[in-house]
Amino acid sequence: MHTKTIAELSRELHSGSISSVELTRHFLSRIRQHGDTLNAVITVTEEQALEEARAADERMAAGKAGVLTGIPLLHKDLFCTRGVRTSCGSRMLDNFIAPYDATVVERMRSAGMVMLGKANMDEFAMGSSNENSYYGLVRNPWEIDHIPGGSSGGSAAAVAARLAPVATGTDTGGSIRQPASMCGITGLKPTYGRVSRWGMIAFASSLDQGGPLATSAEDCAFLLGAMAGFDPRDSTCIDQPVPDYVTGLDADLSGLRIGLPKEYFEEGLDPGVASAIEEAIAVFKDLGAEFREITLPNAHLSVPAYYVVAPAECSSNLSRFDGVRFGHRCTDPKDLVDLYERSRGEGFGDEVKRRIMIGTYALSSGYYDAYYLKAQKVRRLISEDYRRAFESVDLILGPTSPTPAFRIGEKVDDPVSMYLSDTYTIAVNLAGLPGMSIPAGFVGGLPAGLQIVGNYFDEARMLNAAHRFQQVTDWHSRIPRNFA
Ligand code: GLN
Image (cartoon, rainbow, N blue to C red; front, side, top):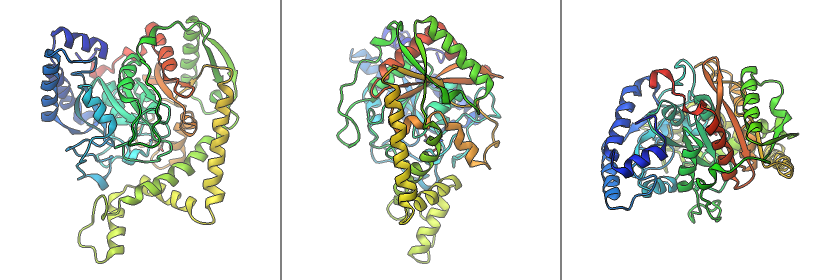
């Protein structure tokens, strides 16, 4: 059951050959079986899942089911889930039971999906390796002494190991695409404003965007269709109709103009990853796509600009966690200052503290113009690069991450080298564009991902290209050997 796609599972649910309760039990038992090895799930909501599965089966029997009804999923643990702990991977929110559902959660629920639990993640979504979680690191199912990528590492590892057919994630600088790439699955970060951020615990509000992680582009299309759309509770959510992402999947790619940014194939790119991308390009050529070289001259500024903008926004967003309004409170504070200092000192981990300090510094009077404002200007230049590129191409292709998954512990003491693993993904967030990562091969047993970037609200075209690629390749259907 766990090797099937949503379309296949849905057909079986509709034909009555399996029930959602059976399917849910199957995935719950896989989570139990592999839970300790991967540590991909923070909270398993077994009873609630079975209840939801029963409700899905009833809905099915009543003839009111859609494609997603009865399909199990995991939510990254920063989507608020009513009555269920929403920890954000942090001690700060270890005892936080969300009083409401995030819009994404609510939409999945009303489609009849079954929540299996909450996926592990880097604390407050800050990280590229999932080593920053209060609940312990997550392991890569392909090589368990390697990281799964981050910050949606739990979601990606769980889907790769088939502990859930699909999962939600969020992407502020690469956190859906980079772990999808490192775990050999398909992940999509929508256009900023396509999916509501309401109930998604904020890291950097002008960059954060929720999206699906699944084994295939087709499954991402199903999920995105149910997730996307206007939400009056998020003022940055855009009121634009949601296309049917599934119908266009099979469209012919002849004449599709694809740009290859020369900056994405320079120094720093692992040769194994480079050759996987070259082979993928050849596949797209066979499918009728036309390639041309493009340039994104400010690409090299994306990591520095991001590491000013994102920490600045996080220092502001995380100020609410002070032990009074929200979050962990220390015991026996001697006065108010002591309460703030110890609550925040105990509640946050090192990486979160590092970002809060950088952000507070960059926003302080005297430095604001030199850092924050400057970074915002660079951000505009980066968006302009893409705008220009999209005048002559329909999609942009390149690697998702410069290297395959690295070893656990390899970069923990070197934050800058960790930050560079998002070098190809971050610019997409700064520009607010949609991007996805699809499996494109292996380098020494570890997956390599291909990134597809689209123009604003052009998710359908990215999904179409990804799906056509997946019809003629089988990278996305490979399963790590210990999880088959
Ligand atoms: N790795 C990047 C960071 O640590 C991106 C994280 C994300 O997209 N949430 O900020």
